[in-house]
Picture 1 (cartoon, one colour):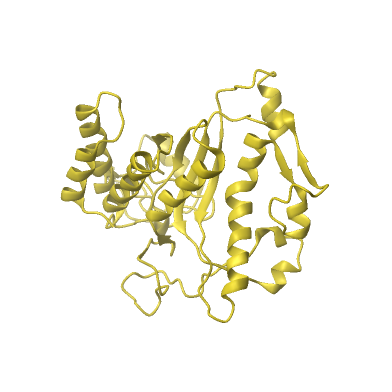
Picture 2: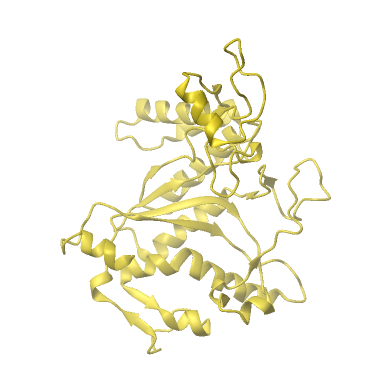
Length: 313
């Protein structure tokens, strides 16, 4: 992948592109009896998920030794290979961030060909219902509709991690950030909270963040979840559970096949869509920031206005 990207630049060293990493803030699962092995597992997980590819396209490092031995970044190993022609082959570092995960050591994983994953994500205590305290993870602040833990501070921690490991010469683009929230209860404060963490990282941490892309503009087909109502990430919510009736309206029956969906579009019908409070919050931050700062950067006053109107997490 790296070699293909490098070839596409024809040796220019700047192709005007970059890659996005599906990152997670991943502390160890808290267990007094196994905290040490869980901590090491979490470090391995973070190294492979968050760092491995970025080290390759910025520093030219191919850490094959880690894949076999779980020794992180051992430059003395003959299987730690430095490719000079891989260095600086990205114009930005893309970060997809949705959640915090807790990582636990797993003996079976360590003995498998997939041991480089480091550990397993603890899900059995996660739950999917914010109203059921018995199902919640002990330290979870909020769960989205897919049971993922919402943790805005994790985005700040990842931005600081990027700065400390790869500096500020290559900018950061938040390529995905969003919440599965069918009833639009938390989307607005979610956006406010995460943009606030980006602002803190820029102002106090000197992170070089050049943009924020919310996932997603409208509810869409999620690769793992399909059109499930629990997987609605859109700033504009779309009702996928309606088919066109004889009177031109939607009769409420489910769209279960792509053929029905395509036929509806061919016949000129449409799916009901509605602007969410999350869209209103993001719009407010963008408009007020542009009004107050001509450079297009986030303004403190815009975040303050959004906090007052929509709240935060």
